[in-house]
Image (cartoon, rainbow, N blue to C red):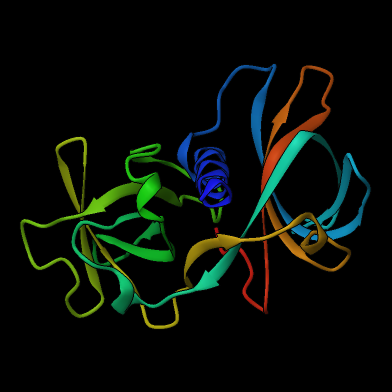
Length: 206
């Protein structure tokens, strides 16, 4: 029971860092999202070859924690679920999902809102509850609510849909794909307390 509670707390802290807060604008302690492949890891340092091609060095804070991602499906999304959806505006109007994260119930409400995201240019992240007021999952369209607002997001076939799962430090090894929301200090150094790692062929899509 104690271990289960610890995993929930760790995952909750991770979600807050990974998909909840928009990038802060201050020069010191800004949030930097790093997506890429692990080159090396020591007890307190991680080198990641980012999607941009450069190697990023991240200092791991004492007691750092990690979660994995598990494959899910659009049919797993139910009214009342709390989700994080990265999306892009569609030419014909509305938003189309780039990825969907179904949060475990303990994380409901973390980072609620809609804000800019850097998965792709002009993308946004919506952390919201699947609405109970209308049929929320119908033909690949999810209706979500946040802060009293409602938004419909289409989920094209093939869109990655995942949920968080357990992982260990041993999963963070050379060749593993990671997503890290790191803090950038005034001197440019990056530190992180939590990260998401790919497991069993499923990579963090956020």
